[in-house]
Structure formats: C-alpha cells, structure tokens
Image: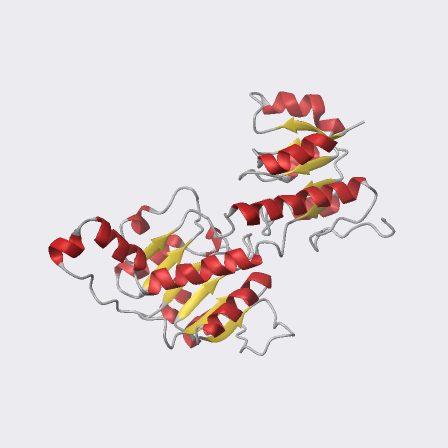
Length: 323
C-alpha cells in the first residue's frame, strides 16, 4: 500500500511524477478546506514533502500524529520547526550541496552588478539614453581591491570565497564559531567584520538567532564605500535600516536576492539605482532545481526503504540502528 504523504505546495513535475509513483499524495495547498483535509487524512500521514513557500510548523505537525519525516525542498530549513520535530521524533531533511555552485555563482554576479551598477547601466541603454544623452556615468565603485567579509562560511560561503579569491579579493568571515579548515581571518562579531571590510556578503540562515543581525550598527561599520549583498535569508537584514543608510549616503550600494517579506519588497528599495533586486533566484535554474528535487525524493525513498535518509539536518538525528 502506498505511503500517505502530505505535499505543502506545487512541486516540479519532475518531482511530482516520482512522488506519485510511490506515495499516496494529499495536496494541502490545493485543498479548498485545509482543516477538513487534515481532519480526514492527518492521522494517516507518515511523510511531508515541502514545496513552494509554505512552512511546516508545530501546529501542522501536531495534526499529523504518525508523521515520521519532513523532506524539505531547499538548503535553508528555517520554515520547518525543527525543534518541535526533534521533540516529536520526526526526522527533517534538506537539499544541501547540489545548489552550492549555483548560489555562489549568483552571489558573485549580484556583487558585480551592484558594484558596477550594471542593472542601472542596462536600463540606461534600454531607455534610449545612450543615444540621446550620451554614455552612462562612471561608476563610483570597482571590484578591484575590495575586501570581502562573509557572514556564514558554510558550504555556499566557502564556494563564494573561492570565487572571490579568483577575482583578487581578500576574505574574512564571521560565524558563530571559527571554521577549522580555513585560513581566512575570523571576526567574533559581525560589527567587527563589517569594520574590517568594505563588502559584506550575507549567506547566513534565517531564524530568530539571525533576525536583523545586519542592523544599523553593522551598516555604519561597513562605511560609505560599503556594499551589502544578501543571498542568505531576507530576515537577516533590517531593511528599514538599510534604506536609511542608503538614503543618507552611508553605504555605496546593495544587492539583494532575498527579502524580509518576499515577494513584497520594501518600497524604499524599489526606485534606487544603487540597489540591485533579484526575485530569489539564487538556485533557480532547471538543472539545479531538478537536482534538489531528486535529493528530496531520494531522502523519502531511503527512509521508507528502512535506510537512513541522505541529508538529515543536525537538529533531528536519525534513530540509532536504522538501516
């Protein structure tokens, strides 16, 4: 008999076809009455697969008393209440590694776009200004000689650092604790890192521990030649403080792929030529999203074959002896 699985959002056809072949799918996102669906099938559900922006909170998990595993689509898993999952004996998995290079490439592209004002320059051409008003202005910033600080030196942060080294940038970082296998200078506070560099790359996960970690004090320390790039989570940056810093010229520019209330973007960011805005596309290529989906499917398949999942998150360890 197929294992009952709750799907929280619309998944890629590539993923959905594989899930349909093995599981009895219940589409939470498509249900007109979600409460009625959960009342009817909640006690039977043994797995949740996330898709879209819907999270898996404690309230939902309480309605799934036989839940065994949450297979999250994404490397950052802050939409899942892992604390409650751990207390309930539910394993949570994510999709690391397969998106590392894609996000790192996006981060470097976003940094170049921001420092050299490439989006604004393209808009200048498309508006016909090159022909009627002349060349685009010389950019105040250059990538040459910049000092890059990385907030979150995990898999993606390290991949960004390797790329940045190829561009001749110096590297420093801030984490909760030093990383053992790197020689980059470590700063034990984010303000200290910002004061030591002129370019801050945010790759940190979301959640209460990092909310508004990049605040007015950090932006002030970064300085008027400073550039902020965020490819981590929108909640890490205090957008109101960022807008205020840009408005008073306390920052050179910002490049953002993630936002506090996405898809809504702070209106103070929308019209600025010193800000580059991307619609959360860090990993958004077909090959990478298919690879992420395959990891999600493989985690579920392994679990229900009696094996350990491929990529459990550290907060929800796999029971001893499984597999």
